[in-house]
Length: 167
Length: 340
Image (cartoon, rainbow over all chains, first blue to last red; front, top):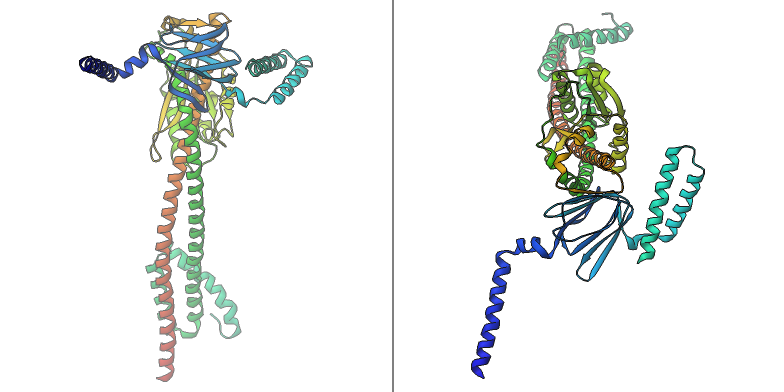
């Protein structure tokens, strides 16, 4: 019994040591390889996430909602108004972005948005007010340009409403 | 030179003449010059006692007053430049914070375009349409930053094989002063009041929209890069034009393009975004450089004002002592003359 217990504990200890050594030797490479995605989530006036290791990022691509996992193929994705969801393990952080581009390189993902705010910070009352203002402007627009600008506003506000309710 | 009451008026007139003579003789109010004049006046007093004394005396005290006025103005200038230096230092801190926070964005956008850096433009038969954007400040007193940009722009246009094809856009007022006369014909647009507050991305977008109205093959940004609080360097940043991007699109072959529009339209959007980003970071850098240069220029000015004030104080004291000495000599020699 003692011998067995001794062997077992030694075996456990040995396995742990080997595991630690493996992690110590190649920690960075391991992080980049399969587990985590290196994410830069930036807006012009500040970096929201700088070189953070995350599990997955879901971005509102113009051709559809895209999920970005580690080792995604290199892509340039145009973003439309929607929610960028960043997943760490079991928690998710959601940010509403107005538009921008997502560049997925071989070793990292750069999400460059023109403007981004946490979904929790959106005020529903302000959104509905803005939406009705834009709709009024669109219907009474003088020229094509003003109409197009108002239409963009409507799209963004609709997306914001969807972001809040989708929670 | 009359006598009695006449002396008063004529004495004053000759004081004016005397001041003019003194001013002509010693254009720089140096201490030694004034002292010499004072002594001569005193000697003159011994020979023509009653007549010369009033005018020599008046001139001496007048010069003292001039120096005192000068000292007061230099001191107030020193106070103003000191205040300007502190304001510039505070503004530098805030702009620098904005710039540091904005740097990751420029890095993120630049990541894709690094692939374009090694692509050489092919020689085309027609002259490429070029745009040169000169970033200068709105207000002066900021050291050499604006003259550096102006010099760089003039040199670029001067060395260009086809100067009239280069269109010039001015961001900031001060560029106009330097460039209006020499390359004024190249100027297409100018923006002012850009740098009143740290530039925002919306402002950069407005400028980018204006640029997009024309098709340019090559866009060059000339601005001051902020290296440190004492070093600001003129840099040229090149944004490859839209056509250039489209013709060399194979550098992006590795990347899939996801969009709900066709690839040409994506390029337009990408180009506009990139242009706005580069404008934004160039303007931030230039704004930071401007504040740093102003801070060091005002610091130098304050130090110079202090030095000048010190020299003037010494001159003043020397003159004051000379005046008192010569008055004493006059009085004592007069008393001696009366005694003897």
